[in-house]
Length: 240
Image (cartoon, rainbow, N blue to C red):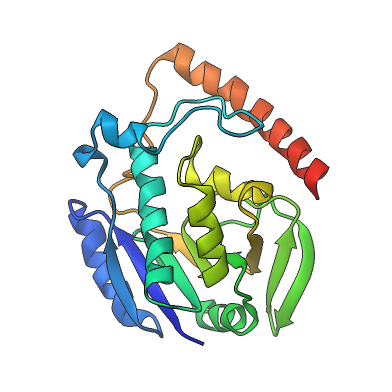
């Protein structure tokens, strides 16, 4: 099986660059740094070409920040690289991720069982996901969660899954991790690895999430987030 790794890295994030270059040498596969799309280089026309509000149901209640659009485009760039390089699967990693001792065995299990249409998450926390076990080896397992969790730290993306995700996200209306949860939109089989074998490290803060500093804005998000989660859960149940 032909598998390569792509570490998504924003060039201007120097500390993350040092870490990403070190991670390339520690992964037991061919790996490269993939330049992230920089929100600072994007104009309104660039955003309008890919982002449209309220494309899907349930409606996403927040307008995307420019940095969230850039993050989505960076992951699309990784999916396109999987297709262009003729890979069976690609390991997509964000540049503030590090791996723990059990990761190599967990990754090998994922590579051995991945199907072309699979998208296997390596989450940084187990909460929010429950589902049937589809593979096991030793202490490691792969589950098929009823509703995938959030976060885009690391994923093993099969070739057909990459193709399906690219086709389904030529235009998008919400962040990339929330879009991944909507399996009825893109059709990939989203799985999740256990136990947790990766972690985020502090390299100067997120380059994606900005803070809404007004009290009203924060309150609105605190109210609408759980409303959206309930709606998403209902839509997911209806389509399983």
